[in-house]
Length: 355
Ligand SMILES: [Ca+2]
Ligand SMILES: [Ca+2]
Figure 1: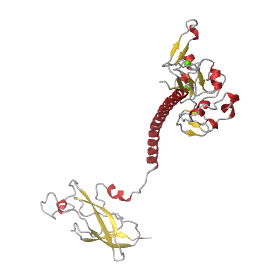
Figure 2 (figure 1 turned 90 degrees about the vertical axis):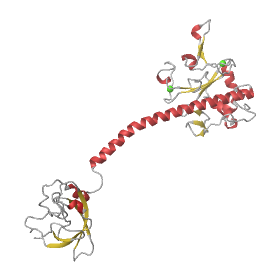
Figure 3 (figure 1 turned 180 degrees about the vertical axis):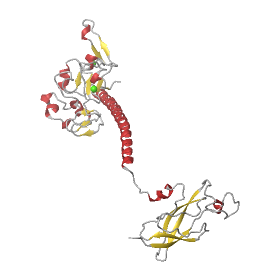
Figure 4 (figure 1 turned 135 degrees about the vertical axis):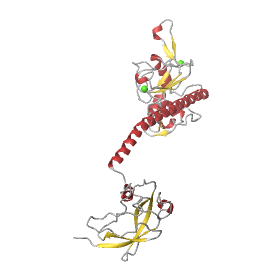
């Protein structure tokens, strides 16, 4: 179906400044024309807003137009079969010219003499991101996350190690304060009996001094003044428990109470665990020589420990700490082994409270 034609009046609201319209060779205003400037190099381009009106339209329609010096009259794209429109070779501010267009067109194409036609098309570009742009952004975010997350993990581990050292220092100070108040260490009568003239270690099975395994819970009931909450095998234990071991009812430890086996002092089993969830292993100078021989480090040694060489039997020498309390924990990996050196393997990250 042959399209019908409709004539619209176009008003240029922002024409170029007159200085830009003068032909370079004429030297006077409004001389020359498009033909005279056809070979002239374009130096400046301006955009203007055009409003198209027609008798049948009730509101303006904005159109993008590009102005430049050599194409003073904007050319209009038309079909080859369409007659050339009658256009003036120049027009002044607020002048109106008839521009033919198809009544069935959804938009009007105006300038074709523009040396950079893409300037007109940009206003019609659809917004948003392409799939490739989104993939590039996602890849950049993944790379950044890969760099940042490990650094955050290392920083958190270091913070937990520092917190463990602080808790161990406070616990050692609490034990010494208890000893100062009562002239004995926070131990049950059973633990004192089991120590049998040596030091005593509160630790998990395999890390204690004797077969009497209580970890540090027996000691913590005393230090936080919760003796009455201890079960019968710890509170009484056949007359060798912790009953009456804190008659002044002094609370020596201000630990964060938690549940189950979370880091902190558990309200369920009264085991004091480090920030990684491992129980603190505590050796007390039960024999009162101001030296501590730990059941674990006494054999493999460690930084800050001195070997007490027995002149009569050098091979039986133990590594000892010059102090009344020795505390350590398994560290971030939650493991320790007596079969490797103190600074190797799973022992390398152990947290030592005396350093
Ligand atoms: Ca000792
Ligand atoms: Ca370890």
